[in-house]
Image (cartoon, rainbow, N blue to C red; front, side):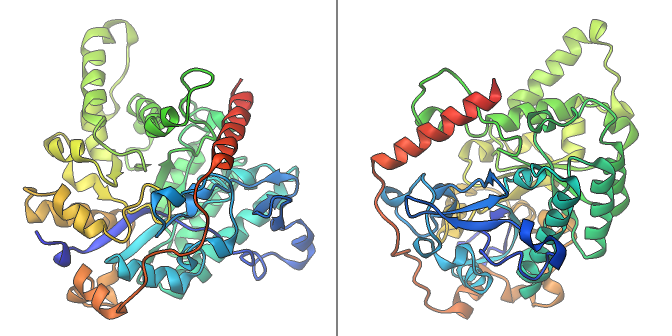
Length: 428
């Protein structure tokens, strides 16, 4: 395997949505309620939906910046790389990073569209969610359909409306939607009820994948009050552990054996242990737990058959590949977030996957994503034109250093503390 020969399809990137995204998609009679970008007193730009503040975070838009210029406090569009929010520039950056395509999650709305669920009028919330999806599919993905896997957000406050939206999105060619890693965190029904059955049925009917991104419950790993920033950053994948725990023992698999979930941005090195623990739990405790196995599948079998997972840079996971169903394992770039290796992801993968056979590399880097999300860049572009080398040659010389922004300082620690204090209050 050589970096130049890789074909890269990411199952987790993000959009720093442009300020005019709603202009063409909100009906006139709802225009006054549309989300907007506000100039804050500190000079930053911030999304608002009514009085609800968006989930802007400087770390969500640091592509091309050295780590000493990573900021936590919200920033301005002109302090970001244009590829964060302009689709043509994004495609240039993807090519400069050797990436043919990617699935893009939202940013300011929360990764499951949480902010757009919080308006006081459900009818208006639904209008804004549909407008977001139409912008995302028709404008963002539609500008370069061979480069983007569309991913919709759902009106999770109304499960029947969510089912309708899943079918509408599938008709537009979108077979991925965000779903909360823990809906209870958003004040919604638990996965361990039948409340979500209409949504699950729509996903099965349309072969749509439910993507559970870390942070999509508006919660974060919590240890002890006053823990410094390295603690939650180190534990950033912890919420995915809880999600896997719920999924392994959920009873909806009995009713919806064709349903597929994806654990997004949670990495994979931890998964084999928790599968082993699940097997131990079943063997030692099912005498009293009375857990019925869906279609006779033990926890590890269920995981390998029905749950997709992904990684950015997980050397432990690479040592444990035999513990996974290689057909359900994908790669993610996470552009333009702070964990991304852009533009050197191909070189990082070459080192990371040394010793992995070429067939497995192809599955992980692009074939699995194409199959699960019904996306085929080869339909419009020859396979040999999709490699890292071909894309970089096609785009030519791109300045991959982002030359705007500011060095990190004490205001970033203050912003982190304010954010974590607010999260702690809402979780009590």
